[in-house]
Image (cartoon, rainbow, N blue to C red; front, side, top):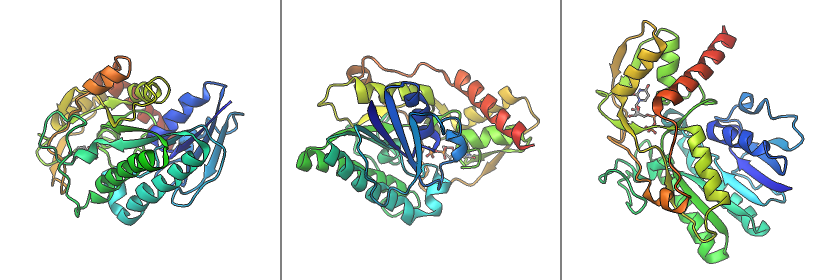
Length: 317
Ligand code: UDP
């Protein structure tokens, strides 16, 4: 059996990954999460399966086990969540990476870092290729996440060069889908929940800023190709995101049209250091990961995500 550790496994992306991994009975999945932003309901269907184990653990302290593969998805990822507790965010990125890299090195395991498009900051190059070094404020409200993730990448490559650790680094662009936390403040979950509750959709700024939204299943396909089917010496970093770009106003209008409620759009102040635009250049992923590219258009992904949030809302009532 392949022993696979998913740090941050009860979070949005981590839990979707765990669910996919446990489907293969040759995998034994150990899910670590301190439940700071992760939620047990995301893995409720997996707890009790013979090839799944949940451990309440904070990656800021070492965890010892035998392991063949490690995915490091542990970090608060929504701007309101990570900027509320910036010291813990930085420590999770750095101490978490060190502890997991040490574990990977001792076991000779492959370790994948879930990095982020935030390493590009407010990008001056558009779309963003991996070679772009970014435009990041080192002392702002988002820096705990941006710089934490940048330093984590540094640690991964230093461990590879100095200790021979087997690393893979992916840079994840805005991703959405089932298991997002309805209250974590990200734009897709905010808009859908607001629309379902008949509240105003809060657009920060004038809504002309852009993002490129990737449905989580497309990301999981990319992760599998990177971990299990790419050249051993291909370490990344590689962008995984949907290159189809939308303004935030367009997203709000789509959600309104799909939910058909009586919500309206309300404009609110733009948070500091909010990137003006973001779109991945995915040429490297296409070339290295067997032609990988996202398949699920925003309309279809939004329908599936709205259905998920509708179910949560009806349980809550
Ligand atoms: N945003 C918004 N309304 C919201 C939440 C977010 O207009 O209720 C905007 C936010 O300012 C940003 C974009 O939507 O420009 C994406 O925000 P999110 O927090 O989802 O992720 P980010 O890409 O900024 O990390």
